Each structure stands twice: as C-alpha cells, then as structure tokens.
Image (cartoon, rainbow, N blue to C red; front, side):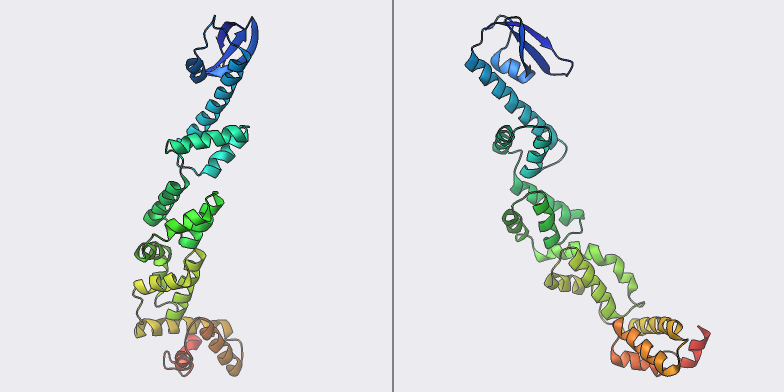
Length: 270
C-alpha cells in the first residue's frame, strides 16, 4: 500500500494518512517523524499495525506528560487521568512505565515532596498524611517508611502551627480545658497521643496561678449567670458541675463557691 496523501487535521499536531487514495488512519507529528510517513512511501499490514500502536502509546505518553506538567502526581492519579481520556489499560501502563523509567513518575519521590511541603507550611500529622496519600493511590507501606524518617522535632513544629491560635485562651478557660482542646485538635489533624503531649509541652504552658484564678473567675461568673434562676442549693450544684466539666479541680471550684475568688455578693451585679 502506498501513501498517497498526508493532510493536517484541524487539531494541531495531528495528520490524516491516506493509502492508495483512501483515508487509512491518523498520526501525530511524533509518529510521522518516527516512521517518516511521507507521500510515496509504501507500507505493509505489519508496518501499519506497528505505526498505529506507536501512535497510541505516544498519545498516552503525551497526555500523561501534559498532566504531570502542572504538578507532581502519583501513578494512580496518572492512570485515572488516562482512563478518563479513554486510553486503554495496556497503553496507560506502558506510558506510566516509560515515565517511571525517565524519572518523571515516582510514588516514593512524590511522598517525600508531599511530606516536605506539609512540614514547611501544612498542618497534617503523620496519620492524616498517611490517609491522604493512600487516597491518592500510594501504597501505605511506601508512605509509612517515609513518614517514619521524619524527626519528632519536625512534627512538633507542624503541631505548634495547628494549636498556636489557642494559646490566647490562657486566662479565659482552665489550663486543663485548654490542653484538652489542644489535644483534641491535634488528634483531629492526625497526631497521636504521645506526640500531641510533646507538642503541648513545647508551648511551655506552665501553670500560672494568677491566670488560672482569672479563668476560674470568668467561667464561674458565666456559670452563675446561666444558673442564677435556680435556688441556692441547685445553683451551686449546677455551677460545680459546669466548672468541673470545664477542667477545674474540686479545690478550685470550692474556692469559687466559698467566695475566695470573687465575693459572692458581687455576683448579683453580673
């Protein structure tokens, strides 16, 4: 069969190949150059099949490379992208293997970059990162190996970013309540109990009796205003329960109810 015509398509970079006066197949510039598909060249069936396969593989590789040009991706993300563009599994896997060999697609390297970015500006702990990477199709074993390489000091820096804004609550709520809220937030961001304790300790929230008493006063007044409509016995019971649930000790609560923090006669003014 003889190539009788090579014409450009409206789509840039694609060409129609005519054999013996009839349209036969389309090809990219890369395929045209690879097989020197010029008018007058003869092709047999095996060559045509080889050209078509090369063009299909090239299309998959070009799509994958284009997808990777915006930001790093995982193997799973690239395969899903190619599937969405109706690339066969065989061609998609071939493209992925080629990009992997060239060093453009590497899940382990992706994990390292993902972790590095989180350590620099993110707010995810190890468990949260592992979950996100797994959702991106990365083998959990690969992710865990890289996560285990990170020093606790680096995780502490990330954790401090997570709870830094909560430090202003010192003097407003009890020390125990602040730490409970901090620990809860850290757990929600993927830090386990051990590293959460280290993060909180690193903030040096040492017990300050004056600040604790100020917090007790504020919360006690708040509780009094909430339960003032009850008789004295029930009001004290509810205030005690409220303050205990907000992290104050029995001794601190008794001090408030005994008028040692604020004269109880002044509470009526609030």
